Image 1 (cartoon, rainbow, N blue to C red):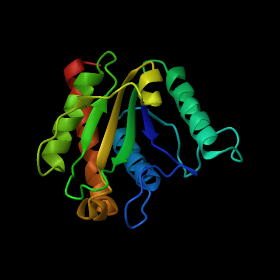
Image 2 (image 1 turned 180 degrees about the vertical axis):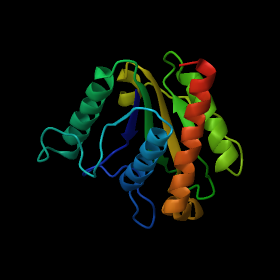
Image 3 (image 1 turned 45 degrees about the horizontal axis):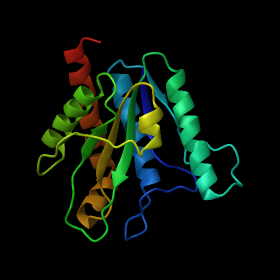
Image 4 (image 1 turned 90 degrees about the vertical axis):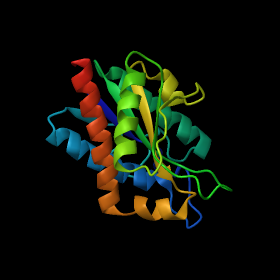
Length: 195
């Protein structure tokens, strides 16, 4: 089962560009496109969220409490799935460095996560990156990636701090291109692993 996680949501917009674009909406748009492509390719997918709302217990709680509740609920959804593989979709930002750009995959080091991240990264390099980036191990400060029992890949689809890349990420055709690249990486990984 492929579990697709659109990062952030609700009051937690995630990274925000200089023009005011929050990553949460882009994450959801790309995740929904990815779900469609993976389903078309015959994979079973489960989404942690399908709308803008967060998954928190108490919408009246502080933003920090909402974020903690939301993240724990996502982990519960993921860990309830037998043989899950997680792909979490995000956007990056590096204020003060407006030229940094490109999609990059990170993994949690569990089971086959590194191989999956490498496969997704190669597909992103081939399809959308102007310069190759490397897949990396994510640090343990990311709660979702640390507490997911399964292999997990977090994909930063681009930099909202780069105006040109932000414009591309807002384009439906480019979102589809990113989703198709991630799907191609997933398909290559599953073919190679034989599962």
